[in-house]
Length: 129
Image (cartoon, rainbow, N blue to C red; front, side, top):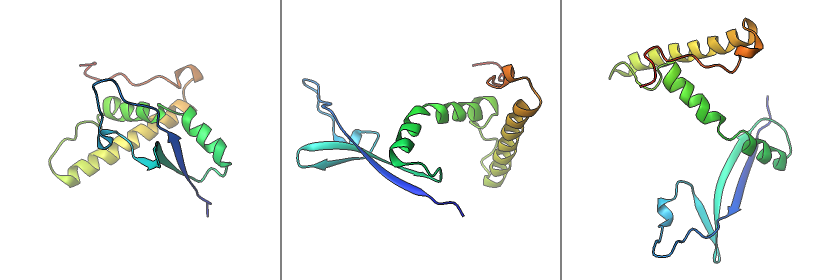
């Protein structure tokens, strides 16, 4: 059974105030905490990687943007961004077929294609619109 690590990270939140503009803390896209007069951005990590905390935080920051790339592939290349029905069951089946196609594509890139093709994306069948 894997061992999980749970990390809570807080970063000092610099001044976000511009002259004449006051942002409400509730409008920020991340949770914050306040200790005395200092505000902090907070976030958490949960992993089973088994590395030291500081190494995990650096690894997490280095991979920034990869999850957005994966979401773009799902939504654009494999039609996961538009579900075919208003019926939950049909959409669930569509989603699972799309995920299986994504995984099959990934395996084929690794096993059957030359390494130069590994990072290529599938062209959208209808072209970019």
